[in-house]
Length: 226
Image (cartoon, rainbow, N blue to C red; front, side):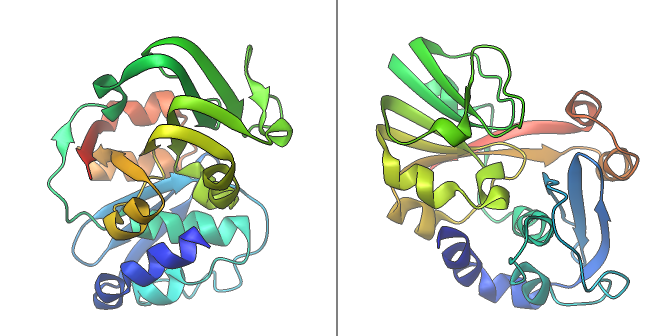
């Protein structure tokens, strides 16, 4: 499983870090590590957090390794997202690409790009207009495929990578992670991330049930080519 491989790739850094705060909001989950970095992921509120009330002070690796349920993967992915060790550039990686067909996989994903056709698979129970329900996804061929990091939380990234044929693969979005070895192994060539520019307000916004529109005030988009 790709998520397991990402955790193993980042295990050395995860074992050095401890959790100092965590917030599972209605839309997003956020984690603060002892080196003051902040991670964010999409919240999928399915399952139980058996270790709730005992999270603070635990090693990041111990919690990131708990990935049996969607809510556990929300916390795990937020922890992985908090590990920032690559030199990122401002902007969105999709701006570097153009072509005939773009495939997008995510929760109500909204992308403006220079493609003649955009095929969108929506993870949401009620897909947005002109998007296909992800449950209908079997196979797809496109020039570029953008897979949002929420696929890690939902545990569908393996299915997508196996069944999409694309010249270029991009991992994108709030739940994206920096795991270059694993991602390159599966054909990814760029990572797009959301980085907090005001950690305190971003964290509070998440804890207080803020939407993507509210969170957008406190973050910036960055990317790196692998």
